[in-house]
Image (cartoon, rainbow, N blue to C red):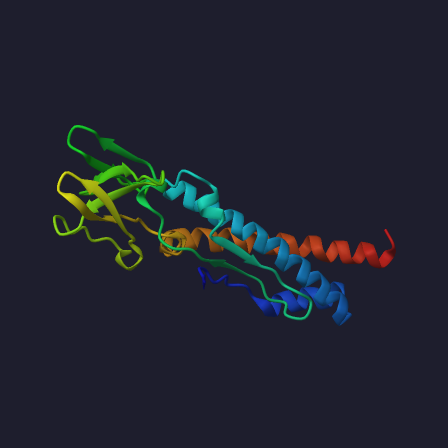
Length: 209
């Protein structure tokens, strides 16, 4: 797993604000813990949103399933969003196939036109669909060669190995500096609002409201 973005927060100012309104360390920890968890849940949602805006992954679950919010506790007072998962098969993104020429075009990135993959879309006997190249006949290089699985399919010549093609995974999608910058700005703004709400909530609980 990997953390994909650092948030630049002035923790000195945060401490001053907590001291000003709450003073008691236990109440300060409680408010900060609440603010961190509300923020990190929002950060996960924001990351998923940015991937959908910048990439053509078809199923939301293929994105959110690879994002994990690690929540804070009053003891740790640390929270993060981690990315996990392998590169996604090209069929998880928008693609089209040319039946006559047995070629497939895929565009994992929303801002790019569909490019020729050098492969073809096929359904295996198991029902699995993928975009494949025949090994030995065409060498297709992607950023995820290590993750490419090998498949086998029956041809007129017998059994010929196939290799499935993959696009970027969630970690690679979020490695884009422009995306992480936007997420960091949104999350910083969310944290400031969440901290104010958390302080108000702890104060209300203290007064019995």
